[in-house]
Every structure is written in structure tokens, then in C-alpha cells.
Image 1 (tube, rainbow, N blue to C red):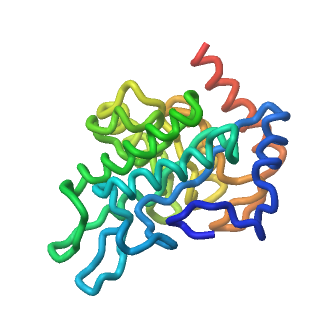
Image 2 (cartoon, helix red, strand yellow):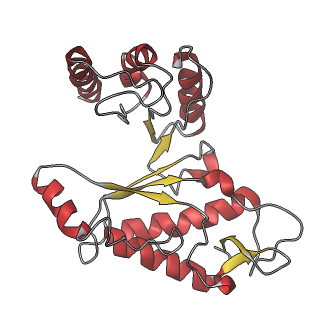
Length: 242
């Protein structure tokens, strides 16, 4: 209903808990997309504010905010709540900055981001010890607040994405060798580029799929050979893990 409150929208998900239970019965796990920093729906006093008092971000330096965020995460992941299996944390780059912003306590920059993710990570593990938390923080200081590092959105035109994604994977592995890597899949520029990247994903990290029927940039449909290649990609990944 709002990015800052993280309550399921009943108009879109009349019974999200039951839907997740259905996926569990199929042997699947469900991750929820979680938007970092967005203050939408929160009282201004729980937020970092500009000189006009307008909220610009949640404030993890405020104990009341930390408790509220933790309560939200527990409601999303605990068996008594929605019972999801983890979070894919996005928009960490919106860490607040500027001289004139007002916060409750100390901490700024990536230290404040670590504070926020620490609240999320601890609450996730309290709710479900095997919950998976994916972040976009390839920095050694974030090893204690993430399980997996996402390589993030691709940039560029219609050329191969393999060089940039390989480089990103090398950075993530150098910074956090103990964590898993989410190879990402968006926004792939073409079906040929998608096919090329799919063929090496197992070498970089956990294969990630954003497309079920077609490539959104070009509208090119996935063909039977692509679904076979997907299966083979996961088989290669499983072989490397065994």
C-alpha cells in the first residue's frame, strides 16, 4: 500500500499469505522486493527531513524507526505473518545526502546504509533463520548484513553485456568472497545478448531470470531452445555446487 509501510495491497494481493503457501506446496521459495529508504506512509518524525520538514528517507538513526522497520520485516517473513522467504533489497543508492537534512542521531553515507540494512537483516533472520537477503552492496563492510550480492541493472545499448557483468561479478567476489552472487537479468538489450549472457551465468553466480515469455526491450519472444538453455544453465550451476 505504501513503500514506507510495506503492507500488502489487498487490491493486488487479496491473500498474499495463501498465495505464498501455494508456492511452498510446489517446493518454491518466495522473495519479496523491498525498496530501501522510501518514507512513503511513515510519520515525518520517523524520517530524515529537508529544511521544510518534508521526509526524504526513513531514518535508521532513530530507535523508533528501527523498531518499526524490524516489525515490518518480521510481518513479511515470519510464519505468523505473510511467511515469505527473504527480501531482494533495491534502491540502496538513494542513501540520503546533503548538508541541510535533519536526522535523529549519528551516522551518514554508507554507515547509515549499513545501519538500515543491519535492522532489516537481523529482523529477517529473527523471523526466519534461513531467509535470504539480497543487497546491492559490494563492499567488505556489508558482509554481515547480506547473504547475496546482486550485480544490478545493465547499462548500454545493444552490445554484449558479458564484459560489464563479468567485471561486476569480479568486483563482488573480490569484495565479498564469502557471499553468493545474483547474476541479475535486467535490462537485457536483446535476445541474442540474453542468450550469450545466459550461457556464462553459472560461471559468475546464481542464474537469475527476469523474463518468462519475451525480452522487454525488443519484444523478441523466447523460443523452445531458450527454455532448454535455461534448464541447462541451472544444471550447470547445480553441477558446480555439487
